[in-house]
Image (cartoon, rainbow, N blue to C red):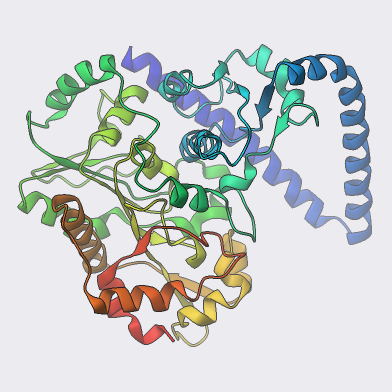
Length: 434
C-alpha cells in the first residue's frame, strides 16, 4: 500500500513539474520576442480566451443556474498539488463560513487524483465537502469554478499578490476555537503503531522539522529559490529538543537531501513507510512543527498544533498562521554595500511583498538566512509556550512586539495576523526597529 502511494506522489509531482516547465518556456519565448509582437500575441491570447469563456458561460448557464438554485458553489481550489494550498484554502473557507462572514453553501471541491498533493487530506475534507477526484469529471465540472453563478474565489485566502491575504484575519478571528480537523479513529489506531515502527517509542513526544529545498518543483525553482533554507541550520534546535527528552522527525520527500545521522532524529522524508495518511498523522500529533516558508507546516496548523517558522520571506509573510504560532524572518541586505535594511525601510517599500527571486535580484537585495542559534531560540520559545499553560511574555517582549507590529499596514501580506515574531530575534535586532 505504501509503495503504491509513493509512486503516485512521484507521478503527480512529475506532471506538475512538466506543466510548470512548459509555462516557464512559453514565458521565456515571449520575453525573447520584440515588445510589440509579444504584446500582440498576448492580446490575441486574451481575446481568444475571453471568447472561449463566453461560449462556456452560455453552454453551462442552465446547469449553473440549477446548481445555484440548490445553493451549490464550486470554489476555485486550483493549487491542490501544493500541500499548503490543499489544506489552508478549504480550512479558511470553512472557518469564514462558520464565523458568519459568508453565507453557508453546499460545496463541490474539485481535486483531480492526478494532481492532489495528499490523497488522505481529501478524506478529511469529505466530511464537509462533496469531493470530486475523477480527472474526467473534474475537467467536465471545472467551468463551474469560474462561472459567475457558481464560482467562489479562494485566491483571496493565500495567493494574494501585493496585497493582504485574508487567511490571517480569519485565523485571528477564529482565536481559541477548536480546529475543524482531528485525526480519525482509524489513523489514530494505525498511527500509534506506525510511529513505533519508524523509531518513536510509545509515549515519547516529538517535533516535526522541515526545511524547504528546491527539489520538490524544479521547473519553477528559479521563481521561489529565495524561500529555501539549509537543514543543517536546524541542527542546533534539534539537539536542544533531543536534550529535553523529545525526538525530531524530518518531514518532506525523497527529493530532499538525507538528514545527518543523529540519535533522536528520524529521516522520515526517506523512510519506506512514508505515505499520505502518515504525513498527516505525524504532523497532527507532534509537540509543534518547526518549519519555514513551505506550506508543509499547515499539516500541523490545520489540526490545531502550534508551529514555529524560521527563514520566513518576504518580510510581510513573517507571521505563520494563527494565535499559537511564531515566526522569524530572513533579513534583507543590500548586495552592493552589505548593509542590513531596517524593518521600516523594508515594510515601507514594495520589497516587503516580493514573491519572486527575480524581484530581489532586480532590487539589488540579498536575503540572509537565520543562523542556527536564532532557530534554536525560536524552538526554545515555542517549547516553553507549549509546555506551560501560564507562559507569559515580559514587558520588554511586548514592547518590542508592538514596535514591530506597528510597521505593518493594510496591503502587507500578513497584516492583521495574531501570530508573533520570536522574542529572541526582536531583542537581537532591535536596532533595526524604529
